[in-house]
Image (cartoon, rainbow over all chains, first blue to last red):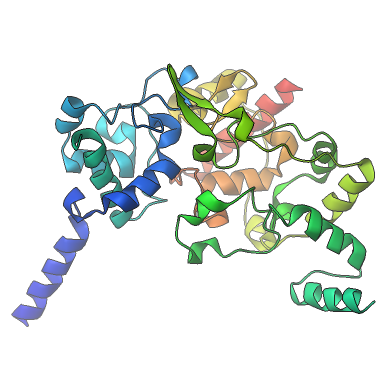
Length: 118
Length: 231
């Protein structure tokens, strides 16, 4: 019985705590193209096609120092719950309803590659 | 004759009434629109998300639940672009010195229809109504809202203008323009799509955000007021 409970807890932890290390950056790249480039830009520099009328510019994902200051948990929260959830702009929408946890982890893995594997 | 018979059987099996539309009209619409638009449910939810990048144009298999017929007839004769960056923006956007820009040369122009063709296509498209029950469940009575409050809500509070234009010269370009939405779309579709875009398209690029019905009504009413204001 104890073993079964332990396995259930472990499974729960594995599900809840997906980090970028669990993500597939190449899958994340495809998702980034679909959902993020419109604002964050095709190169991830924050200069997407939507920005001319924006009051707040999107994050530059190629900025190594800025991105290094963000934890995986912060990035995950911003993607899932939107900019407002991390005290940033409402222009960044919440994607929790469109993307599952694995897809969000894939995106975070790609962000790490974009910002810091140069 | 044999072709018509086979086509009639095929269309009947797809739930389309051949009595309402002659086989010629159906074959014409399928040949004219079906090359780019999905006229039958492609079951997006059973495909990987990558499929979104391969679509040429919006699915039309629920066109009768989405569009207003009069708008369809009119637009098909003068098909001005609704999505400034195309149906799949990443395929039409390139990096420029001051930021990304739309590569206009990559965008396809929708063909112009004659009045007769537009009526024929609209009649057929309006018969495609697989989600009538979903819309019947919507309780939305279009109302009024102060344009200023609606505009603030649309832009500053909800951030919809990041992707959508609510005026010809303001807003994002990756989503469809919304200053024409009220003319174009059925009110209950607008309400339903804002409430749950993923129910209409599993791989929609519109964020599916949990909004209570009062918030959705404010947004839908703004599209009404704003659309009427644009006329």
